[in-house]
Length: 195
Image (tube, rainbow, N blue to C red; front, side, top):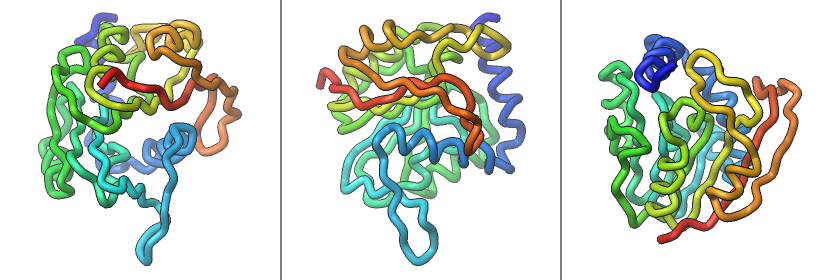
């Protein structure tokens, strides 16, 4: 499957983006493993207090974790999929810039953090995406599925050793049993960026 077909598959998987509960519930598990801590207020226990940090979410999809953020600096979601127009408006109403661009084509910097979760299998060149993330931010938080075979919408088999090499550190791996919708072998961690 080529990159364009993988993007169309991903877009179709999300459908009209209206009922995103399953995706968002899985993201809570990603966030925990990426070292993000939820805080409670009188409305919800699901807030990410960014304490002024600027964040680039690469491949954040129609329901980026940034939508649960408070006290953020410059917030950007970069995702190439053609989601419904209201998705972009939702981001903008929350103070998040939404860029329809591939992670391979990012040419930006100055972010405190870059977040990458459950997206590298859908890319054309995940090596370039990670190089751009390292250049863009001081730290990279990542959660990806590894040792998952190539299939519809998934162009690569990600391996822990290769990700370690590309990120310049050692991630953690964990076999997840399906709790919270998370099933399979996961790779995650926090890594230093180049900026």
